[in-house]
Length: 313
Ligand SMILES: [Zn+2]
Image 1 (cartoon, protein in one colour):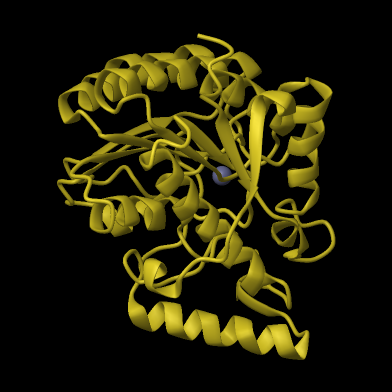
Image 2: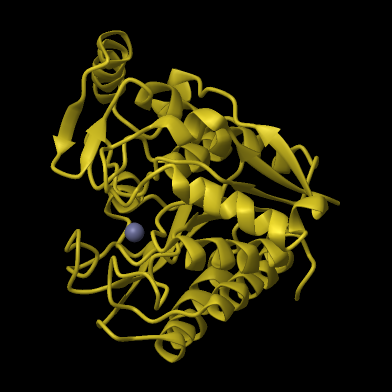
């Protein structure tokens, strides 16, 4: 069975200003590496659809979705920019990009649950895991993975969804949306102390947060997965595994100071694949989060996707 890739040219056009690391070239780097390695021929590409605003309101407050959409619609017409925080800037193309990004996550989840593919990857931007119930922040507008998880639970009838987040930053938005929710288990590693300075103070029981100190690499990461993530995931027995797939913990990524390697992304994906095969009929949906060193991003996504596509263990 094939692996689906959801992406769209409109995700490239969202532009937060010259020199901003969360830029359209990130998607080019991923496409280039998929082509250069020949992995693209093993994948089925689909256009990311625009999300239904009702789907966003399952993860976010209705007021936040209406207000954000109104601001983005204004920018679409005026061509102006609006800064939600100093690093999170919307332009005329942002509305379409955020709707494609969340739409990809929902469509990928539906396709995998319908059995059209066992696994799917969403090569989309902007990322989502810092977006809380009612706040756009940290390069994120809508929380793509959270929207997909809520869709799986509320519309597709699942009872238990796992969210795996190995981005270098803690997914504070996803935690805000799901803390204390018995239908969601979030397993994450992140550099600490570091932006957004969350995830360590008295996390809820369904948040398996493993903070890593600056300089930590493969050994510490794999230990966290083996000792904290795997027992919790096996006890939880997810029916679907979602990834907040950020690649900014890579040693070559100077956004932060963790030292993950290309091989760590293949390894963690194969560990999660085993979990998905034990409990979730192998169903995995991965959504791009961070990753700013373009070559390392492209290579790491290839490692991740080779496992999703069943080409490696
Ligand atoms: Zn990040």
